[in-house]
Image (cartoon, rainbow over all chains, first blue to last red; front, side):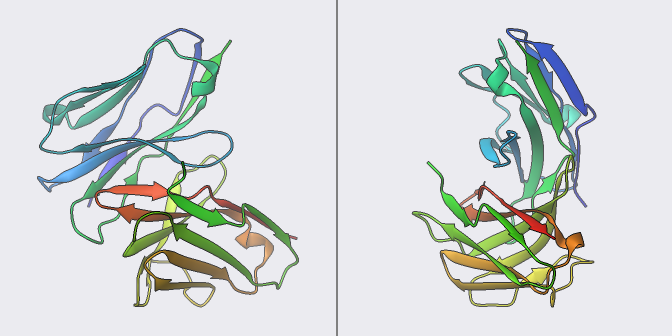
Length: 115
Length: 113
């Protein structure tokens, strides 16, 4: 069975600070996908990134960056120069590659960015 | 723009009413759709997996007679909460898979009085 652990439950930072959201996963499968989603107070889930298990390259998208380390089964997410609009719940998730495979979500991290 | 459209956004109704929620994939065909339920300050809980043209697969503990799922076409799945009661009040979110990525609707806030 798959498991995603987001040990941090709530993080509060002041605007312009950098913040890293941790994600550790467990699976016995060698091929899988990892995801990050953002859920702002309005409730919708916004897709941020998908990473294949065989692609360990780190990724940067604007202020967002992701660090995928298979050796430690981690897929951490860093927001640089945080903004108030980044305040949301962030979910890390894992899915195997089968057609009907299910997303396994972490419990989510509530990020509050104060002005 | 949104790739999954979910309606309605919110519903308030009396106990005993049945409520239908629609989920449409826009610009792509989704052979598999998923329905989730989310309680306040909690993660998403998968309720069922819906495949076009076949019966939905429900997760353990989810009443299939209570939560009717229909996936009649490659772009539409519906969830009907039958004879809803206050304990069914929650945030329901649908999801559709496009290739390897799963996209989510905006969710439906259901409040049963």
